Length: 388
Image 1 (cartoon, one colour):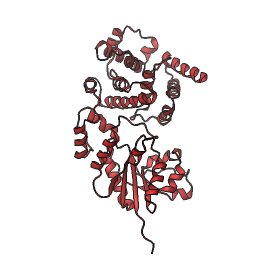
Image 2 (cartoon, rainbow, N blue to C red; image 1 turned 120 degrees about the vertical axis):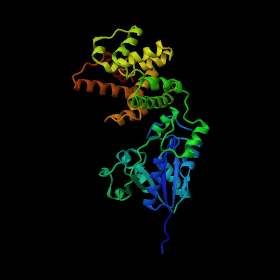
Image 3 (tube, rainbow, N blue to C red; image 1 turned 135 degrees about the vertical axis):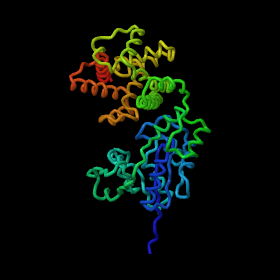
């Protein structure tokens, strides 16, 4: 009689922090596949997503131990120990050596199947583990036509009701000194005890709470995180990027009188194109407000706020970073955002060229005037790409 093989679920992520949505997914997936064990694997540097402000590896490990309770779960440092980019195939190869006789089940969100064939060595992944795709929405049907019949047999769909929450939203709530939902008391206590996710910007957040609505505050937090990641990647000051991203839309909800008060103080003269497009006013009034109020005096940061909407020719590194972060922050969901995010991983300039072209085409399609600074930004990227 053949001995029953051990079934091991593999559930990876940044877990920054691990929340109740993660725990529900892991528990329900384990039950559906009959797992004997589920390995919880905090990632080191995930290549498929740009993380926001990360807690340290050991801190995320400990939060996972607190979040995933019970003998079913084992928190593994396999990717953190590798200390480099964490590709799934490398992890699965290693786990196959550790558990040669076990059946491995790799747990992902079903939406990831749409980009799965772009993963590093994706075909080998499917030979090493069965893919357990947990549905993110009721009735979700993934297009499996890109897979062979043998590969489709290695994909299991798990109909699990999602818990709508993200680690980004939780970090935003913590940064605002709030008490976020969807965290276990043990994890929240650990975060508070160790001062995690406190980036020292609480005084600036008080200003935003007085000037912006909740949606715009959340967007600003997302841009702040994304800008800090891009700064680390491209060699700018992450703290300046974080602050510039946080404050870039400080005047977004102002009325026309509020905009013109600070535009007048800035000494800038609005052109007819400026007057015809109120969506660009906040970048001018925002930089002026921050400077005139003495909130920010750093010229680099003010420049990033000033040009984050239209862009311009000869942008500084920080200006490029905030401009791109505004397009690819975690809250953005326009049709081309995935393309821009992939471009930003390779080149700020390529991302800016794509987004400035996107903006020009969108304005032309709506028969709207194009801001000269946007045209100059586009031309600058084209000329520099040709020289490159």
